[in-house]
Image (cartoon, rainbow, N blue to C red):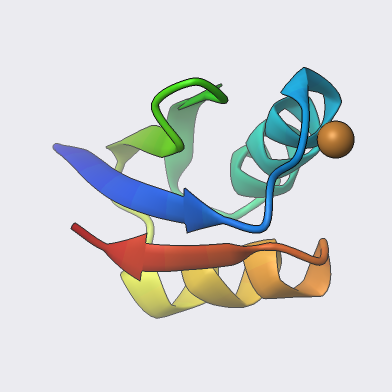
Length: 66
Ligand SMILES: [Cu+2]
C-alpha cells in the first residue's frame, strides 16, 4: 500500500530528509520518500497514518492528508 501526504513546515531539502528518516522509523513503513519541492511524502507499507503523523510532529513538522 502506498499513501501520499502533504508535509508542512519544511524550509529546505534538509528538512525533507529529516521527515523522511522520521517516517522510516515508524513500524510498518517499508519505504518513505519526501519531495521538498512538492511538499509531499510518499509512504509504502502498512503503517498507521496516525503513527506517521505523530512521528512527523515529533520531528518538528506536520503531516496532513492530501
Ligand atoms: Cu530545512
